[in-house]
View (cartoon, rainbow, N blue to C red):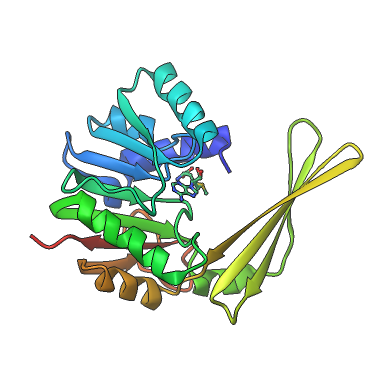
Length: 231
Ligand SMILES: C[S@@+](CC[C@H](N)C(=O)[O-])C[C@H]1O[C@@H](n2cnc3c(N)ncnc32)[C@H](O)[C@@H]1O
């Protein structure tokens, strides 16, 4: 999930992708920044960058990555369910399926309302998830990834609650031991996530299938929804 290979892909995205092309000096919040793969390239483009995450371990990794790159980035430990900084940002990113984590649907809507509040008028929120329509095309096939140390990670997905939610189980098999971790998250179709953005107060809501601004259709790998806080 946070491999060196992905770091290179993210750096190229931030450099080239149309949806990530903001005026230099923009105030950008990476909400659920994880180990900071987006933070360093965003700072390198001259933006004023903040990363928020709940996990101290992730924030430590993000701090190490920013320090190693000499990137001046503010890091904040906070829960996206509560975090707001009224009017503080031009852009808020929530990427790589960092949305839909709360068991109560109203709480996920609250995350969008919080982001709306933290944007300056005219500012934009981008949420990047695996769309329900895309997931339906490949779900059910267990996926295995071989790690350099010889261990294997197996991912299995289970659809829950009539396609409202998904459980993902990761099993790490190392030597003769196996450990499993699971997360649950809501699944959204393009229409559903578009509707949530509108309910949270965003206008100019659009759905894309990639960060280049391609359409969300049967060829898409991701669902990216972008909305604007009205002026
Ligand atoms: C799938 S990872 C994505 C990380 C990063 N956006 C990326 O592209 O690599 C999701 C992140 O959300 C963070 N997270 C989970 N629940 C959170 C919450 N309630 N508030 C803030 N961050 C949270 C996790 O710690 C994790 O770093």
